[in-house]
Length: 139
Image (cartoon, rainbow, N blue to C red; front, top):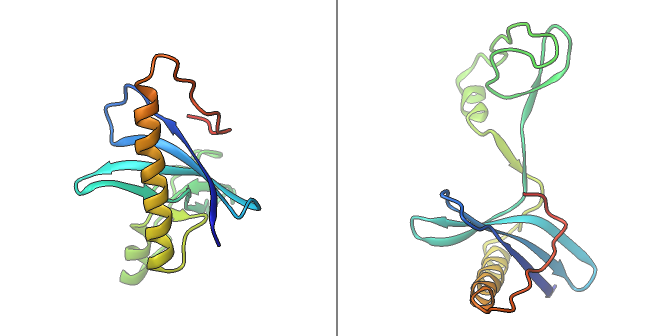
């Protein structure tokens, strides 16, 4: 598996740690979008695309984000459905990765490639004729 293309969309004038979004294409056949480039305490790192975890309302069965106190659909209070300690620890995780590497070597490879592309895009952005890449990613 080879990374055949890496695109970076810089996030300008933001006060938080999110610096850019990336799109990575593998072997000209498979793409992962919405990879975040974040400025952490130990430097830049890559966060894979994720989704918020949900639970169903006991009353109307609609989906709500974990730790929601009231249902977005019927407005009734959402009772704590998880009684034991193990379930409470699991509930602390509010997001789950959609796509992710399955070993440390692949994670390092993706992170190194994406961070290198980020640095190149930052350099290119200093040019007067800079034209940012389009990624099909909503901000």
